[in-house]
Length: 137
Image (cartoon, rainbow, N blue to C red; front, side):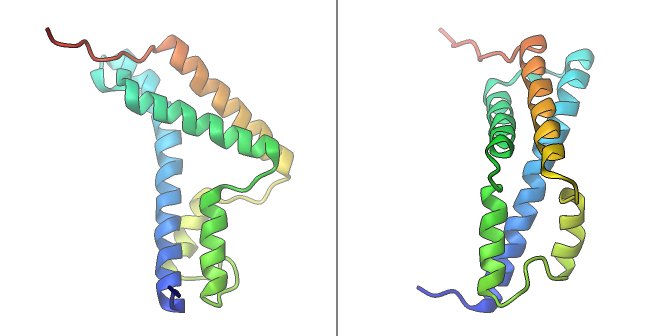
């Protein structure tokens, strides 16, 4: 099956939206965990979402240490190339959303930032322990 350039462009935009969602999940999750623990929000103790949060954050930090690009970035760029676009050309969605999550900085800056962020999330895991739901008898 071949993908038309127009479909590839739309898929690339959809991946970019997903990528922004992943970034929001990781960043906002890390902000809301301590706030929710302080405010007594029960959902911040949910085991499944907390496990997904910590694993995703550690995965991102490991990618940085290994010098690997995010799979979503690789997939989006491949689709844009297939569509005949220069990587990160100026479509509306791409223009605004990519500016939220992509920055120009030396690689070691990202390694340090992702590592520090992963450590923060791991500390939150310890300080605000997720709870498994009690089974009903």
